Image 1 (cartoon, rainbow, N blue to C red):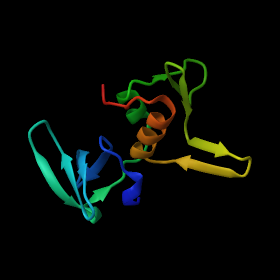
Image 2: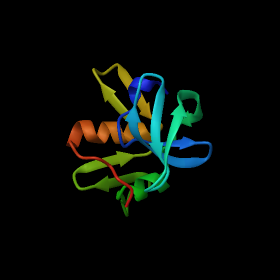
Image 3: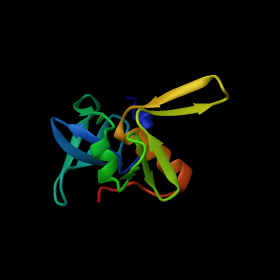
Length: 115
């Protein structure tokens, strides 16, 4: 994970706690673990969260009844493991929650939030 991969609102793991990025500066991130507490985190303290079925459901995706690895939210469909392909030769696996958040926002203009 690189600093330029993050946006405000991305969910990360900070010492085993779910945290959300609320401010980004050159060498530190300000994250929020609950409604009241902001933490100043060093880059090395933040870890990406693996993208799982549990996370898709938290974001409001619904599991397809006929295809066991297919999930949808309005017009957006995801099949796990999630791959993103372009130019016939580039295949990228979406492995982390923050990557899905960023891709979803880029394609829909809407944030993925925990329901």
